[in-house]
Structure formats: C-alpha cells, structure tokens
Amino acid sequence: MRGYTQVYTGDGKGKTTAALGLALRAHGAGFSVYIAQFVKGQEYSEVKALRENLPGITLKQYGRGCFIYEKPTQKDIDLAQEGLTELRHLIASQRYDVVILDEIHIATHFGLISVDDVLGLMRDKPESVELILTGRKADPRVIAAADLVTEMKEIKHYYQKGVAARKGIES
Image 1 (spheres, helix red, strand yellow):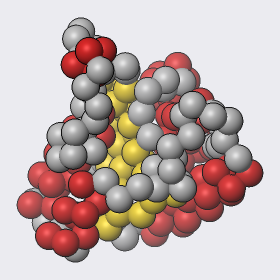
Image 2 (cartoon, helix red, strand yellow):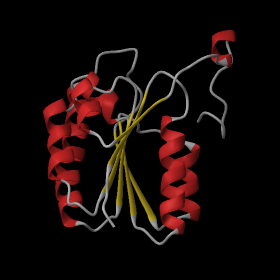
Image 3 (tube, one colour):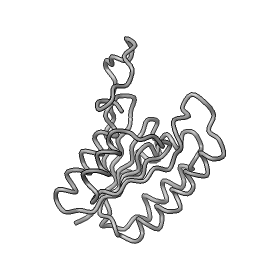
C-alpha cells in the first residue's frame, strides 16, 4: 500500500486527537505505528493509555514540557534534534507503517527543527510509510508538499470562559 503525507493544523482543538484516532485505526488493521511527540514531555492521558493498553503502538516524547509561554532552551532544541535524528533512521528503516510527528509544526515554529528538515523527512520517506504531521502554524511549504491537509478551525472553545484543560478530555 502506498503511504501519503497528512498534515493536521490550525488553531482549533483536535489535531493530536485526530492523529491518535488514525493510530488506533491503523493498529486495529495490523499496521505498526510510531508516535513521536515533539515539545511535549508530560504524562498525558493518551500516553498512559497507549503504554498500558496498546503496547503495539510505540510512543516517544522529544520534549521536556510545555514552554509555549517562554523561550525554548538549548535542552528543548537538543531533544527535538535527537528526535529528528532518530526519526530519519526510523522512517528509512520502514519498521513502522505509520509515523506520527505530533506537534512538529510547533517545533519548527519555535526553531527547534528547521522546516527544511521536515521537508526532507517528507521527501525521503519510503513510499510505503504513512506520515502524519500535527500542530498549529504549519509552514506553507509543508502544506504545499503534503498529500492531505486538514485545518482545524476554532469556532468556539470553553477555555475562553476560563475552563482549564480537563483530565481525559484535553490532557
């Protein structure tokens, strides 16, 4: 089966959730799945659920926590670069049928990884690998190079009324 490159971007909620749904579907169909989470380093509910219930889906985080309101540190950059290096080899190996790069667009937006590096991953991926890229602020060049692009658009969100992220729903 031919693999494509999908982008989930935009300011609305649901990009990671959509990618996780695809991972679940792919796993159910017998595909091997690797999820690389950039920027994120916390123990989110999906991380716990995957590790405890779906060991056939591999998840690795290349972040130490959320720095969105601060400037990234050298440690943030080093972790993202480590992820990039590992992913180059992992994707080329064709060990996984589906590879999800969660929050990769945020990583490029904050300069942890270059857009050219992401375009290289897209260009060099074997034809059989399905590549999913998520996060706000997808670069126009990535959008142009992708096969499928979905923009999540926020119409209304309860956090605007002061509702914090709820465990099991947003975190």
